[in-house]
Image (cartoon, rainbow, N blue to C red; front, top):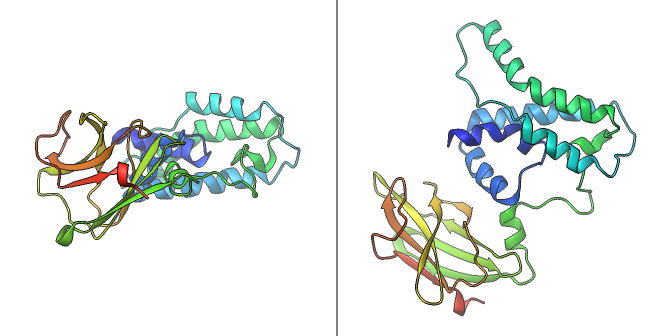
Amino acid sequence: MSDLHKLTGAYAMDALDELERARFEQHLAQCEDCRGEVAELRETAAMLAETVATPAPASLRESVLTGISQVRPLPPEVPAPDTHSSAAHRGRRWLPFLVAAVLALVVGVGAAVIQPWATDDAPRLTAAEQVLRADDAEKVFLDLGEAGRATVVRSKAADRAVIVTEDMVEAPEGKAYELWLMSPDGEFTPAGLMPDAADQTVVLEGSAAQAAAVGITVEPDEGSPQPTTEPIALFDLTAAT
């Protein structure tokens, strides 16, 4: 999980791929430090962007992504009692990002620094939104009784599946809910662990276009390469509507 702290700069610059973005947004909902840092990084980039109005060159997206991949910020640090010392650490941690932002502005980025390949008419969607809004989205709903409710949405075109839960109870202590993609021949492939949250939207890992079902099992906290318990829920994608 500590690696996710390193993605604040790339997320603020909208430079993550779909899977990274989905995982980071799950982390962001639970990490106050990262939420604050993302907000401040975006504010800084916006202020820098206001100083230039030159249209962005066609090669901008590639150059910005290349630069960001080489200068990601360090994870958030525990603030020291000395306010001056803490501020200095934060300044050093953001320095690579600010340098990259300034360099991008020098070559004529303008407001496109924040999202150089998105427009007001076509805003960038998260990985989950792309599936949920897909024209070919298929849905399977299950009422799990006292355990809550869940809906799996699959887009064959996007080759992804998303699970949306409501009022779902937490996994037993020391355990976690693990997601699975089941092939037509009944083979289960790990598709990620679900956070302990009653209401959540999780993008399943792996190719979902050919999956026959999505399952949930109770596994050890670290997950398992194969199910060790019977599924508490099995979403039949062949009957999706």
